Image (tube, rainbow, N blue to C red; front, side, top):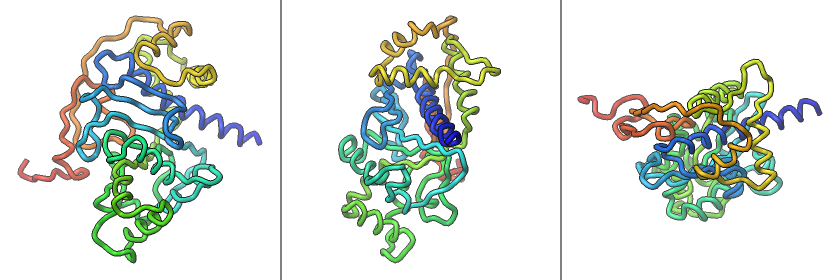
Length: 298
């Protein structure tokens, strides 16, 4: 029982720190994030969501500007893996009757009916299982499905065909509907430990002139504050409301540090977006296929 309680607390801390890493960027007046939500939004992808200013958010993996990103955080104390069939099992997300894939379809139909504008990401410290067909269908750089790998022109007897058939049958959709879903679905492995997330949070707190958690303190009070806000119904924040929520807690200790950061990217990081923390980003992703550059003459 003791270990079970610790596991639940660690999972809550993981989700809370993902929230703070996004919410603190609301305090950057030149930042791209304009709203952050916690435990609200489409069921199954409601742990954390981010809304970007029109034209300032990152491009998705098809080059289309994002407006919203919805995250489902799944933390495990022990290492493990998962495959394409797990996404059809309610047990994988500790649910009784609805799978992650079914929840993703519901979210896509409601928030991205054409497959653009929003995307839905599972963020977990588990890895895709070695030998599972999904390993070749999920881009290892940005963590999102590659529909061209899922729909590779092969029949149902192929590796990709088996994935398509099981997913179609499970969801009750045709190929066109499955392709639209795949365009919005992300399966990202976050290898950062809880301590890594706390260190990253510390850097942002220093930058915003906010109270930092001393390294020798075991408790990170920002974790608990997130759930105090949740209990009070404070689940959605823009720049003004987030600052107003932080002020009574006396979280501001110094003036924000002013700096200008520009970014250059040749790949999409599965968790850390340059657009979240840069004034402007030179996007060269379309010139690369994973690490190799597409045009060798360049």
